[in-house]
Length: 362
Ligand code: BMA
Image 1: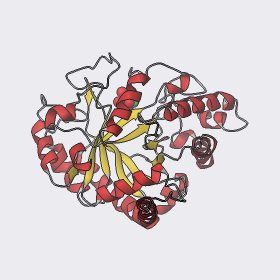
Image 2: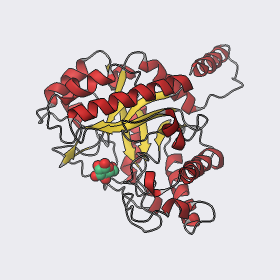
Image 3: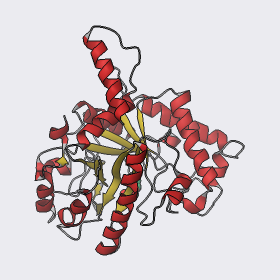
Image 4: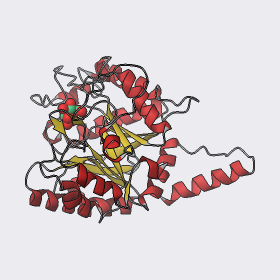
């Protein structure tokens, strides 16, 4: 990671002397350095789909202007530092994503968050290219194979990648600069609930899938502003041998993390997350990668002190850059809202010195 500092330092020196730097630092590396520096001060708070809807309100997606509302803002008076958005549906040329948010709104809100100084991340829940079902359609185990070279759905998937590429390319600031994005495809791949999951493809097919998308966006489209993030699901049993089986490789990944939800007991969650973070933080350190909880939470927060009692004491022990709570939707929410009993606990989390929200990272 020190490399980023060096390159940025040299470039700034040259710029100060009025000279055009020889090397242009990729935006993804500039973002990595920014995140690494911020990590020295603590971890950023992130929220999925923050500006579109919340537990008690629905933006109804009208109007072209980015909104100024979100549940985190309503609860603590500050935006999350990180906002997550999902591309599911873009592959078919749909006007709205899988959660009914128009892509025009995603486009505007993502840029707006970047322009207000925040950090943005994109996930993708593409439909099943073989059956036409959702990302969760896992009845057929030949889907990944079908989109790789020689497969029956290869041509179709090339079009799907192009649509992703076109949307990503459209994410530019007013002065035409690409917005740096933490890009997080093919997530939770150690589970078997997505068509790219553990039992749905071989290790080689998973690598083929990852590489095909990455090579397309990186080499064919020339995108250097994507910070590639690898995020399997909470596992509880990582060791190097198991983890490396589907890890895309050090030259292909800048951030590692995992999606960690408490679905069962608190004890199980705590022990699995602690075991995973012991492994992941060592791996990240050894290989010069950023570390994050790329998704996390407890659905509908039945325990109103869950964040400060369960999550925070674990996160405090590791060099995590950010944690991203999943979306706040009416019957399924993971973040705070002023109307909820967990609001008090979230304010406590907000006030802790090592939790970073937008105002603290600008
Ligand atoms: C899942 C759920 C779904 C949603 C999907 C993509 O975890 O929240 O309701 O469609 O994420 O956002």
